[in-house]
Length: 459
Image (cartoon, rainbow, N blue to C red; front, side, top):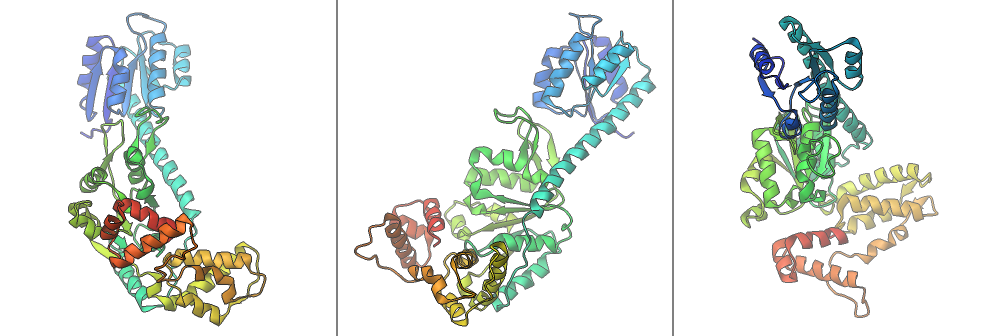
């Protein structure tokens, strides 16, 4: 027989009623739990979740008024506003039934009950519980889709051989569910590539969820990714689905995955291996079906060698790798990118700059672009804001001359601490040919601290 009623909790101070109900309902439910003492309700709700709750309205202190039943109904709904509660009493009447329904009960039955009627009532309640779950999931998904739609999807711009190789890989892997690891410097467009893969995948009609792993504190990691139940901790004011749960049937993009410490890597690996998550404060695991895309600008293979990134997690996330070239390695794409940003910011700032002069393009192609496409975008935006002409000239990008690629000296009269620190960091990184671990050691910094400074100075 189909166990369509799920997990049922029955609370009644009459042991005969409890045993009779359990004998009847265990044929129709996955699990039936019984409890004589209503004071244990908070404990039971904190430690498990139930599809249906069958609650007596009258306990020994107050035999006929139903006050205790209403009190415990309120307590249950405060813990779980979507709880499906069917109240039972031997002294019911229409007035009390109406009060119970207004107070949040799903239905109301009289005892002694007719078995067929009780089963029918609980079946209807179970369908309501299922609809609650569906509505909750739809609300979460709809909210995320709305947020996602506000991020304008832009086509990846480029015709260089380097970016064409990336396009080829995207075409090969997008239609599969293979896990993807995108490697590249800051500003190279890793999230844009992830979105392009999603848009070309079989999951394109479902959500794309992006998570910046570098911005999640250790204390909020599980709540953000796996969700929590109301009351699971001090600030948990309501049930909340985690990113894994919201991304179900869609794509989950974990950016800056190299920033996770080892304990958090273990928790992530467990979720990926089991393909299920458990909200904080709940014992019920939820199956997940996601397409996983990860990205990092960190030397993840060096980190494996240094035992700061789990090798088994790396194997799990990089079925296919995509290496994004820095902008300095795809200079042929600068004219296309620059004109795209010109059009974008002309419209945004209501300007009428017709073009970028050819000698200006040459200047842009000679610059090293340590911040990659993001830096080019900001440079074009700034030039458009400040320009009073109809053509962008090299003088509109005078600020780029302040950051030559191989400036390894500090002017004697430059005492700006940020400039001095930036220059020393650049020299250390150059000295060790980009090996961050060695550069950090020479500078007396942790690798994480050095990465933060590289991000700060756009190096």
